[in-house]
Length: 130
Image: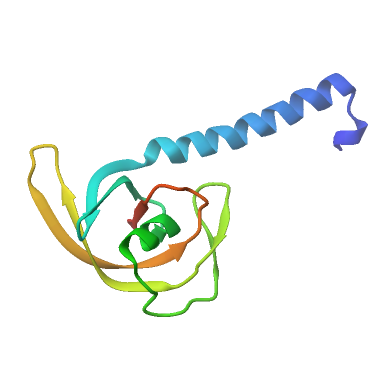
């Protein structure tokens, strides 16, 4: 159908499609809740809750800073709430996460996390919420 439209209408439809995709991405970013979290003594400034993710993730920078090796191998791709698909590089089980609230109170919980390479040089922690 798109090729049958005039160039002006085609451009308008394509712009609307791009705008719609960008608003979905913006909606995802705006739904993230950032945390003050750490693992062991490593403070992770890029820590967030993702209410659309089924599991948590740690990136290469986090794993390298901690000097860890995966507890279990994995062989699957992750299609997250953003537009990117990434490969799971392994599993880490019973990882203790410490979260500090704005009043300075801390809570420590443990969970299982997949290892991803998101290309970011800073440590990142994503806590899935579904």
